[in-house]
Length: 614
Image (cartoon, rainbow, N blue to C red; front, side):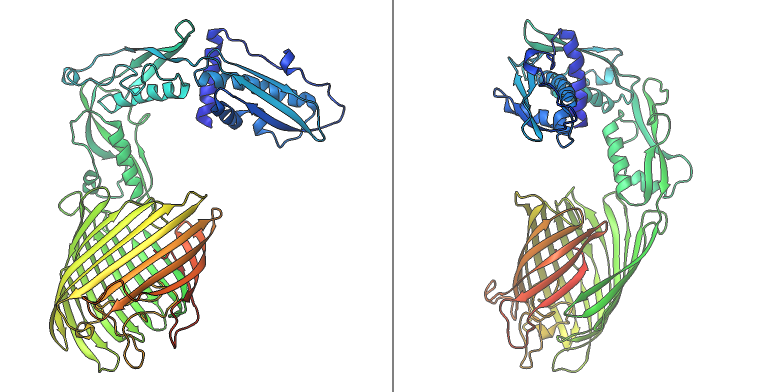
């Protein structure tokens, strides 16, 4: 709306150049009724534009009458608002290219506590863009003469003959200056911009004076004051090479990238007016930064509850700049009655190349569930590479060892070695609460180890998620699908529990006990399986900035063999939940019911945690 008001103001000035008349309420059409003493009314609005209905809709956004329709006033005040609105209507006509258009208005007789207010547009012929002359108050270096920056508005996207909308003209002028700032002239400005409505040809013409300023090359990144990170970290994020013509868009992208790291409280260009210091022609100018570091350490926790584990707490500590290179170390300690875990995750960015990070994760785990009793330690170092804007790949080693007690068996020691490869695609609009886009996660790995006896196996999984707006306000359909399999062994009990598939619970098929969906022994103890299929659909509605609700349907199962009839005999659960949105993600409360309830299954399940279900 602010840009529309600027355009209307510009068109009001153009109206003065064209000598157009602005009919006011003093004309016959706008003569007000005689005011009634001490009476106040609300305006009942009627904006009419038969030739171009969009005019009435846009007028409703800026009209003084529309903006103050809920404020009662006497007839004299309503008439003054109508007079101002008619001036705004004339400016709106010209902003849309109707330079011969007129707007008429009148107040009707009071009816109860309202007064009819009518504004009618008579737009007339629509002008088009005509000649747009650009005067360059400078010169272009010889190295750019073969491919010079745009020298007219047509090259900046303003097509001659298009409807003469003022906002299109202003946007093209801004693009013209921006194009020069991205082609080696960081100080390029528009000094004068004159616009003419040619009533003979019914065209809008322009004369633009552009001052390029000195031709400048991009230099190194320098920091004013103490730098909170290593110079190598700042250099690794650069998207330009030293000595190339200045490109302001690359500078802005660089600043935004630094802001997204979370390492800085503020990121700005140092120096007068974003480094607009005096520069000789062809001089190399550094990109000088003013960085204010953010707190590197965070300590926090959250409380969880679900029917599977009861109440639990998760504590964490994180350092986002451990060695001054933007490297992160995070420690997590989730504690439940039947599950205790300690994990450490480390990431060192820009290992050997700007798009590659070193990653490592390790932890200790104790878990005592109906499926098994486990004590283990694991460690996984590797590298992750950004393949493109939306794709990432990772290669890591994996080692795990400990002791495991399966249902009906004695405690057995085990160890596992693996080489997982992952490929991830993410084109969603939000990491914690996506409303649009899709995700794809592919994982595959060979494993070898010892459990009961030596084994070798190959494990793979594929998971996809999609988030689709439903066309209703703040309503999203979230979809999920998962498939996985293990090959090279005959029975799930031949490999440790960390390699098997389990389903059921908060993160898979809601409505069933944790790990309970799939094969069981005679005592109804879960055994896990060698293949898994899951699917889910969730309709998410957000009522306001803090509250929302969901309805969901989950399905899935685990198969004893990877070559079983997959996608058959799925078990289904359904339910609903509430969402409370916070800056760190939504808090979810879900109640789920099993649709294929078996003897021993609970009638319902309750989940309380941080973050969406997927």
